[in-house]
Length: 140
Image (cartoon, rainbow, N blue to C red; front, side, top):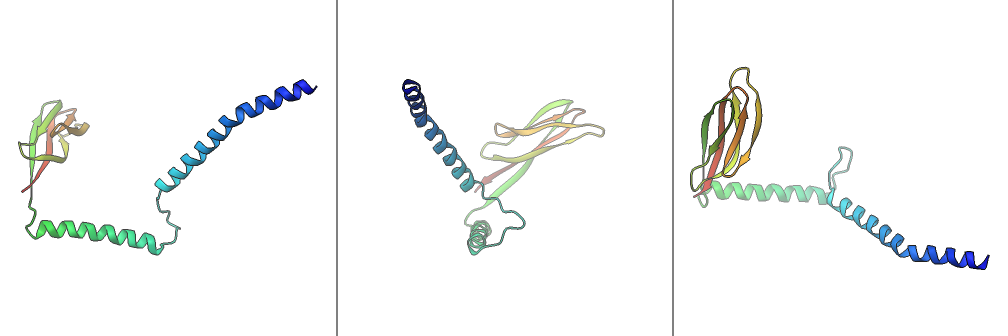
């Protein structure tokens, strides 16, 4: 009987290290997720801290817009289009410009089956053909 109890305690304590590591990892992952997941629920109170964070974000955006409007930074944008035969085509931005968005406009009774950035342009998949466009911008 003494030997069985001794083996049982040895087995439990040899696994306790791994049990504690698993427990600490679980608590750590939960803590990181809780800190990262800062979504606001509709019934949550609007605290001063949350309000100030939102106001600071608006001030940063306003500052960026003001610098664009004041002429210290000029943003020049253009749309580049290409006509697509059925299936795939690529609207590519000219040299010096960077793709910032895009999309596709299918022909009548067509489907837009693909719309995504590709290199420095926008790739469209249009089942019945249509127009693919890329929005291209540069800072002057």
